[in-house]
Picture (cartoon, rainbow, N blue to C red):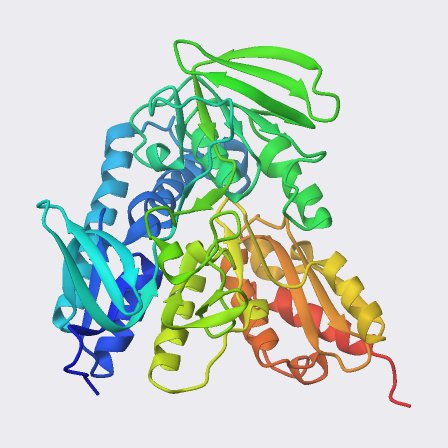
Length: 482
């Protein structure tokens, strides 16, 4: 399938999970592929995101479990005071990053992908410029180009970072020190996960949320229940409706707080450190998108459901984009899925992506997960489509495995069409919620009905029975056929 009139069949700019999956999938199908990366192979997830943060959560989670004397005593276990070495926890994360980064690189090399270290950009249709680390600047031709440049932490105006006393998740994953008192700006999944790590390792946390409730991006019922343990039950002072107008690094770091609505001063906090966890922005600067007439939306590259880049609403021939830079669902597994979809379309297959079936998870202790529509969106969807929305709740406190683990604090909310039984979404808080959501994700992908799902047998005793109970409750509540 290789086209000799081009230097490469496919050039991928960016070697995160989206770029990696696209490059490997293309090479596996006989295409001549190059991938350009200006930083570390593996992108944000491997080097500064999900991989090192999960290593920190795994280690700090063990510390939390061993330090919970009351929980252990319920099993009849009495443990000695817990000791940990911060540097060895950090080393565990760094070693995991190095291993996965090496594995990804070797996988691409074995597949025959040419790895180019440098800064890539668009030059013209089917032409890519690259300034290599050596300083050499050259132009390459490709039949198709895939943009996969990812995202970076968003630092709001008025906030100064120094990487030491005021920093983002990029620096936090290194765990270079443990501040006695740290403020976390934002209560989304990044803020929650790091609050979990820091409190387990003995830090006091103040969580600052500009919106009117903590955990605003989560289902309200799930957030209310989860906050009791993840925030109220820990050494966390959570404040909502206040904005960090300015933050200055130093010893101490200073945070000027104002009321979100009135912008009136509230107070000035002096803390040992500040983690800015206010979301992420696309890394699209420097791509020279204007060369092909592409206008971004707040930096995000517009695409259709086949991953084709759009200019004035129309696909740009032979130009594709995947991952965080598209702003669709800023998750590593979304980027990977988009990468394979883009390549399948390059190969001539007509494929689109189903964002509704892609799950998301927050790896706190316990975990939070979701897939499909929020309850608010599901209600609007039911109004638009003229059907009655069904909502059922299944509780971990009725689950034998959760009770055996003494971890029965949890809830699953299932959303479905009460006429057809189609699963529209689910939200879970509880032990291993990140694993449980996959079953519901598969049901959403297949547009399955709880009528069928309720008859499927689940292993007993397992946490999966939380999902089974929800399916059975939903099936029992369906509107009888006319």
